[in-house]
Image 1 (tube, rainbow, N blue to C red):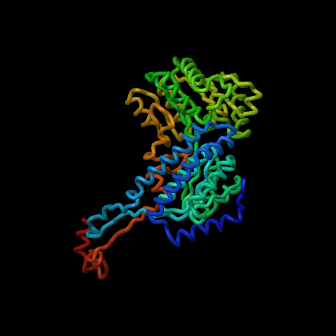
Image 2: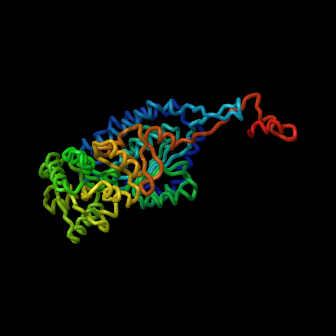
Image 3: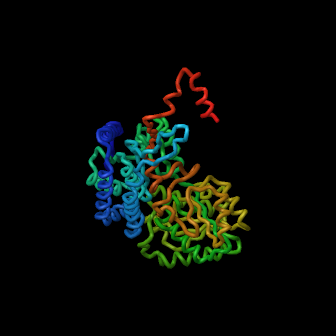
Length: 469
């Protein structure tokens, strides 16, 4: 992997900023940039999928094209479709006291936006924020993850084929490079990663008062209510949990289900695993864990649970030597783990699914509310009033009702966290606004009452009484 020298970073930022100040991208230029980025990525989807598979050890090309290809293409299409409308000044009321002045909000580019992207969806979580920043008229400094070096090299080559280096720069390296990028005097910084690292990023950005968008994580709960069909809940939760082997920031982290149906629900999950992955003899459609450190962390969760006598139920069987060699961790359920286990204190970020029984909805809500505010929430109920009750009580970054993950794929919905799961949002209009300055402008008319609001004040006593009424 090519590593960018820390000493180079200030000069790279100066180059980006000087070019932006010399000529801000026009709307025509932005539209052309987005079109060329889309065409370049679409032409190289097979190459992209191969790079991701190599970085993970194995990830199905179809899964990568869905998660890291289609999602980017869709986001770019949405940006192109709405860009001119979003860029128009918005008329707002100036108030009758300033009549006949006119007021407006003008979307204005910020300058240079930094993007620090993670390894789990290494193309989507780099290119969607980058494309959004480009749409808003900014230049971009991208730091992709060091844990996916082949994909990061692919991104650097792809972007170099579309943008000149004074419009988009890609810097590579380890955590020290990411920390240095966080400390630069950028005009905005978007970081996707863990809450612990997000705190460090925000602290570093604060040195230059750089505004940040933080897409973090947390323990995203699914609440399966008594009225919702078990088979359907199991199918949809299996998709959300085991897509990318659970290495998804908005994967359902744990499931709360009524006590009477807990065992039946686990059986339904096991059936889903058989239907999707067979006996794991090849596991061609199942993603491996990204690296040895993550694999050992997840195995540590299971070992701790077993040591405490908590039921651990692998939903498939794989030879241990093969599992260790391939970093193949099969879908696994943990029944009713206590809160002091690590897997209930930390975001799991893997294919382990705690399933906890609850006596009633009040108890389920109490469980959720006892934790940090989650990045995602998944209520499953066919009763609208029940869903509304859950939505009224739980503050979360985003919600998909009766399914999982899909609010992320809705281009018109903002994506972001709240509290420990993040700050700010992007996707669609929300991203465009986050990476713009909505510049307040007041246009004064040729005649204005304010011309008279000056000393000697004795001459305007009557006007003042009128204005203060």
